[in-house]
Image (cartoon, rainbow, N blue to C red; front, side, top):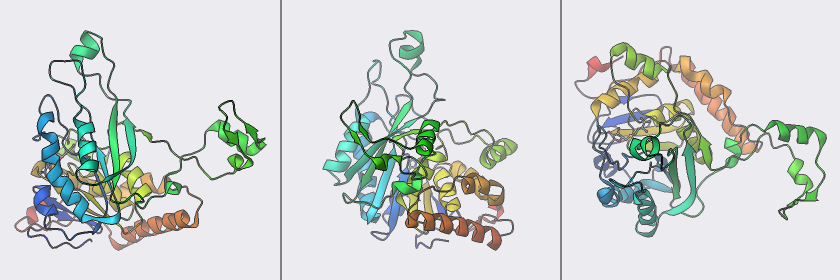
Length: 350
Ligand SMILES: C[S@@+](CC[C@H](N)C(=O)[O-])C[C@H]1O[C@@H](n2cnc3c(N)ncnc32)[C@H](O)[C@@H]1O
């Protein structure tokens, strides 16, 4: 378990991490500088209609976020990254887009001093069409189905390796590798050398992550249903934190999600053998997030099957380590129960 000296006891802990209830800013200010390898988070977005958890209006968003951003920069290691999933929004009463998330990006770089390592887009094919007025009633806009994800870093060269996030080759690439490739110049002018036909065990992914948020039978949802608890309304698909955790950290590194919600980030970090920290303002969300950790044994194969596919020694080593840490976890904890550590909180054991 990761050890931290906060004034408040953790809400719960696991072998690799700890979740804390309360304002992230308060916890961040208690943290030692340069201790975190990766912050991956989805803050409350600026929305036209307020969600159930205090979303800030677009006009006030940047000043609100900058207090957090200064702390993010302070607690990140020099090699660390900040990954922010931030949905766009619409200008009230108009079929036009707010610029707030672009303004935030500019402020994070120009005011706080982060570098934009790369922008990503999360395409969610299962997103519903909205706002109804412009998309389904008047039909003058199309459905908005991507979230921008800003990958920021403290230095221009954060720790990263795309060997750890290779994707399976397409059928045509597999055929090409089998048959061999004749070096030639493409119509675009690109010179394709014989290196193109080298089998790297997978293709380099693009900065478009296609992830449907259609999880309907996870331990978390099953347990929420069984207990009549409303699941968190804006959960990450597992693949989102999984991609960035694999891409930007090594086993044993520390991953922080300051706006943890249902703590998908913590769950993925745990399964990948990374230490993690989660902060969340709403007790109900954090309470339900414990369900993610009640039976790791049952959930392990999901990630074991999707082991990293890089060919470099480093990536191979990472796979072995990640697998080893998962197996060690299984062996060391028969039932793998979450430890309720908050004082006076013993009845929270699941
Ligand atoms: C978009 S949700 C995150 C969902 C999360 N990615 C998941 O997979 O469940 C944002 C979360 O930030 C929390 N939040 C808002 N302000 C906060 C603050 N100051 N400190 C900690 N959490 C906060 C909200 O309660 C909400 O659960």
